[in-house]
Length: 106
Ligand code: SF4
Image (cartoon, rainbow, N blue to C red; front, side, top):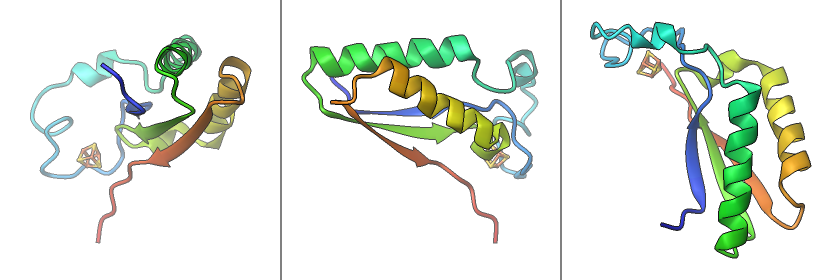
């Protein structure tokens, strides 16, 4: 299967507490066993897989969409490190674009 995008769950916690949330408000507490944020080992493994996927399938662009939990809980340092790691692992000829999936409460 060829893909040019991924939704990446970087945070296993959320501070929004939506009443309808099936992850945090329906009795499944398994998220508490997960790391709060994606670890450096997982970031590097993910980026290596993206690199291999792009090279094998001759892709020059790839989209990464950050998701959670609440991805903003990871903080700016997490994303600075993610991009720094991306630049170290993925050749510059492959353009990585980023998005973020956010929940807005009105
Ligand atoms: S923002 Fe999403 S993950 Fe967070 S509580 Fe609401 S539905 Fe759940």
